[in-house]
Length: 322
Image 1 (cartoon, rainbow, N blue to C red):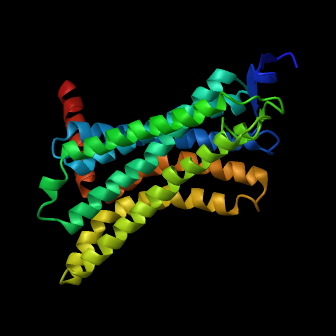
Image 2 (image 1 turned 180 degrees about the vertical axis):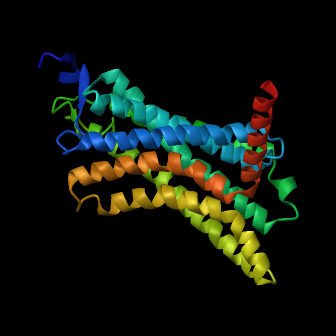
């Protein structure tokens, strides 16, 4: 194997490949049509999230703590899709299946970090909603910009630390079994299973990451909405309950889009065809960044009004030029 560099470490042959081969979509019929679909979704996601960030930045009325979290979600979605999709399209659309060892680890780090931040940002938004409904009179004093920014900064630091640990543990593995990663990107699970030495720590950090990125955020959000439901039950009139609950519909939609597909894949992943599993996983990672801005534009009155105002300003400036 000319592409493998070997070194002897503690009387064990340590094998670090020069590159890996990403095999995820290879062999799936008419897969190029699917890549056109992915490219379309990616472009929509970039445009939508950039638009949401621009509107929040330019409109001074959207400066509440809620929109700090919305801005960070759009920013994270933009980074998440941009860290993943261009490389995936390069690998499979242009047949660049080979990726160097260091590039693969870098690709994995950024992809998983931004994916984790999507979940953590939903936790921040859930906290904001539960405080707004449970403590409406003291919401402005309790949920400040400083608090939300501190939570976001903590989760960014936590996600980066967790992913650095997860990726760092891969560097101790000897890849003497194979260099073919059976996924559509440098996925942690398929990659560490290629190691021929002890992978106990890698398996443990993988399980911990799933708990911290998926199970804990989902449990916190479910608990938050139990508290919200209890608070709504205390409201005297049905109309006021509906009005209060409407402020949560956008966030609930984001939670459903993020958690339901990935939960379905993890539950039924072992009984569906491997190709179907790979396509399902790819959809779960590219759809949320595209749908999130659409949901907030359609379901948030303040953003719709800000968009109309921005459109009016642009039309006025164009008319002024002529």
